[in-house]
Structures are given as C-alpha cells and as structure tokens.
Length: 234
Image (cartoon, rainbow, N blue to C red; front, top):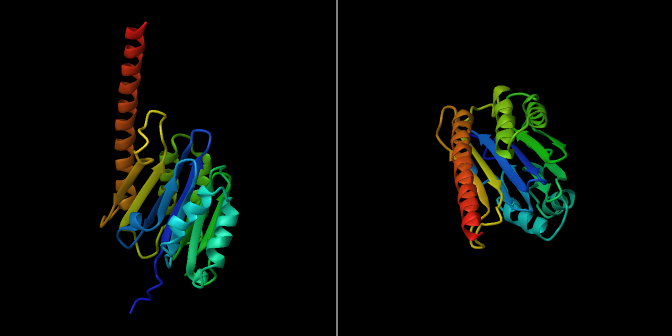
C-alpha cells in the first residue's frame, strides 16, 4: 500500500513587485494540483502548500500576508501551530518580494527548497537533488512576464526529472489587477490547470503562451479604444 504522505510536488512561488504580479506554478503526479497548492493575491503575496498538504496554509497564509506580515513570519506562524509540520512543505513570497520556505524533516527525499529575492522554489519526492536548484537558476536567468519566467522554472524542474513517480498534473496562478478592473473582479490574471496529461508541464506552457498572446491583443484593443475616446473628447 502506498504511504498516504507520498505527495511529490515541485513548485515556485514568485513575484514582480515593480509591475505588481504575484503567482505560483506547480507540477506533480496526482491530479488537481491547482486546487490545493497555489494561492496568490494582488499586492499581498503568494503561497504554495505541498508535501502532505495542509490545505489551510493557503488561506491562512494569504490572510497573514494581507495583514502585513513578512514571508518569514508567515512561515513561522503556520508551521509553529501545525503538529504535522514535519511532513509539510511551504513556500511564501510577500508583497515586498521577500521569500521564505519550510521543508519538514520527514518530507520524502529528495526534499529541499531554494529561496531568493522575489521567489522560492521547493520540491519533495523528487527524481534528483538537481530539480529545485535548476528551477531557481532558470527563474533568475530568464526575462519576460512573471508567468513565462515561472514556466521556465517548471520546465527546468521537469527536465531534471521532476516528481520521481512521473507527472500528470500542473497549474499556474498569477494575480494582478489593472486600474480599470471593476472592484468586484477577482485578481486572477492567469489561472490555468492541466490534469491527467502525459506531459502536463509542456501542455501548461502551451496554454500560457496562448493566454498571454490573447491578453496582449486584448490590452492593445483597450489602448486603442482609450485613445479614440480621448480624441473624441478634445
């Protein structure tokens, strides 16, 4: 019988505080990873909760970030209050781009995290120790949108073997708001999931490229409309 704690996952939480984007990208073997691991809120921060997932690390982490706590304090409070912390893994980035992470000592190997300014990469039950460092290197060496940089990190992790049982599920969540968003709109700028796929990271990357292309067209059309309205008002 498989150990119920065997939930191998690799993810990145990251932000671009100058342009006001926060997000998470993640891949794993079990389905529906996008329903459990990634959490993000505009101008607040992002959280990834994984390994033997404590679902409530997500909403509670966002709530603590919303109150102005930094990433390190959020990680400390969440893990301190959790008797199962030795089986948890957690990555957090706050509104300022400060990051922090936790890898419980009983997470299944290979289990580790790498943090830097504006990001934290973490993984457990991995094919190799190289998975997480490769993700961090890819993110730091890539330019472009936050979504595209996180996908580069996910690609790099998958190239090193990713989840040692294989991969069938991947998701990406990016939070951002434009000034013209109605107040009742959510801050989900990108919210994409792939499940039951033989190559979920590749398929997710394809969806991200399509989504970003359509978004560029939409923003260009809005800009043209705004210019026309300004021209008519003169």
